[in-house]
Amino acid sequence: MSLSRWGWNSYFEALWGDRDRGNAVPARVIAQQRRFWRVAGDFGEGWAEAAGR
Image (cartoon, rainbow, N blue to C red; front, side, top):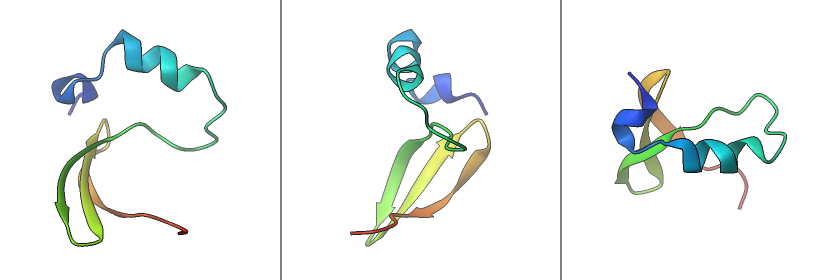
């Protein structure tokens, strides 16, 4: 699944490239259920939980 389907474009690509993100990958939040988020990206779809506070 391409992230461009969820609105990723050259603007966001430029913002993403401004910093060293380590092993992070860009994703789009497509749904929320309490403290969990459904995210989509080039990796497909999956559930995520925020780390930290």
